[in-house]
Image (cartoon, rainbow, N blue to C red; front, side, top):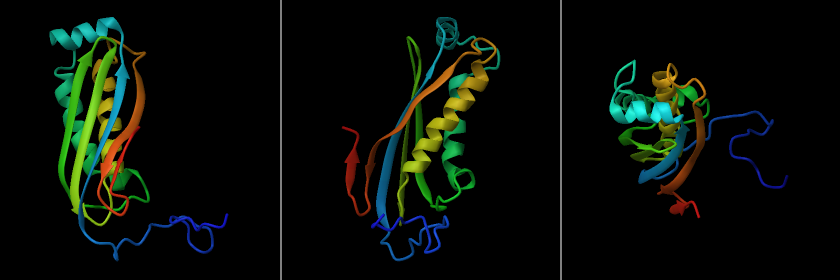
Length: 157
C-alpha cells in the first residue's frame, strides 16, 4: 500500500490519530437504524402495554447516554465535547426506526457518536421488548450525513 493509514504507526500498530493541529469547527452527523419487530411487539408499543414500561423513552435516553460514552466503547475514538444529541424513535408497521443526530465544535467529527447512539438505543429497545419478541433484529445502522471538517458535507447517496 502506497498510502499511509492514519490509524497505524510506522511499525503498523494501531494508534489514536493526533488531531491537536486541526482547527476547531462546527461538526454534525446523522445516523439511522431499525429494530425489526413482530406485529405483536409493534402493537404493544403502539398501545403502551410493554411489560417493562415505556420502551421508547428508555431507548431514547440509552441512545443519548451511549453517544456520550462512545470513546469508552470504541478504542480509537477521541473524547470530544458533545454539544447536542437527539435520538428519535418512530414506531412503524414492521418495527422501530431510530434517528440520531449529534453536534459538536471540536477537532474531529461526531459520526461514531451518532452511530453509537443508534446502536445503544436499539439494544435498549430490544431489552425492553424481548419478553414479547425474543426474535427482534437490529438492522441497517449507518451514517446518513456528516457536516464539517476537511471534507465538508457528505450525505449518503
